[in-house]
Image (cartoon, rainbow, N blue to C red; front, side, top):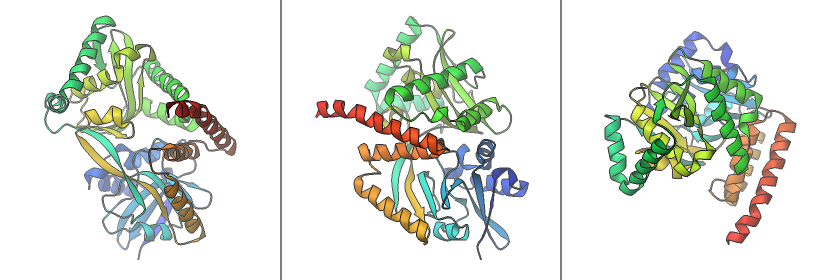
Length: 379
């Protein structure tokens, strides 16, 4: 018989943490920094609503799910919207419907479901995520990119030389620990979010605390990693995220807006791939979204899921009706309804107060109104 226990991450036993880490190594899809106990523990330090449910069969552990428990037994992925990958890290045979019922969860809303065991049945819309994996050398990988898109990468090489010649000698600094550079990357990202009308999830206190704590973490297999491109002593572009051993997943991608004409983000990625062996990286997981930027560099793609898992109770049935309405309206697509839904998810995940959510919703409506004249003019 399946049983479940739910803890704040800080209350997990060392045995459970060890078992969770072992399960993460059991499938390549689970070998991501966001799916293991260390990420849940880090988020737990800044979020009192963080939870981990541990399911057990007689004599052994079945699996783990990290999430934020909200009113109405509603669960959102741990660390969302930074949680690009999430799901049941479990043995084969653990069914999500049964697991939710046993854990007294009514709804689990996911946007980057990793489910190699197919625990979640139906109602899952598939999306692509983009991954750089070095099977041999970085040079061989870059040559494969150039062979696949010769004109594109010839232009990137031209921009690289132009930036190097006109701004300063280019260099990659892996594991950069410069606090000023870290602050600059975040400032550039906040400014970009404001310019594009996106929700400012980086302004939340818990998000700032989490990123800073991970930046300061320099020991162990799990830690924050900042990779930056410099022209001379000038910061040009960078990524910040988390690594687990040889797997790196960046969250923040920022570039100097004054150097936009040189496409520094494209120059950065080519240089970063070349530096992967020096940084001890075999996988540079770019995650989902921003396909135009990521796809040219990713020879590997993985499928992740978006949708809602619901229990057979009142809260679950209400969520199911809502999900069907969103689906019929195009809530999983790339159109305006899909964009609105994803923005509402970010607001609900990052803003912990009613006032914060109301402010985010008002800003979302305002951004949509401002975009409409331009869209109508383009028709």
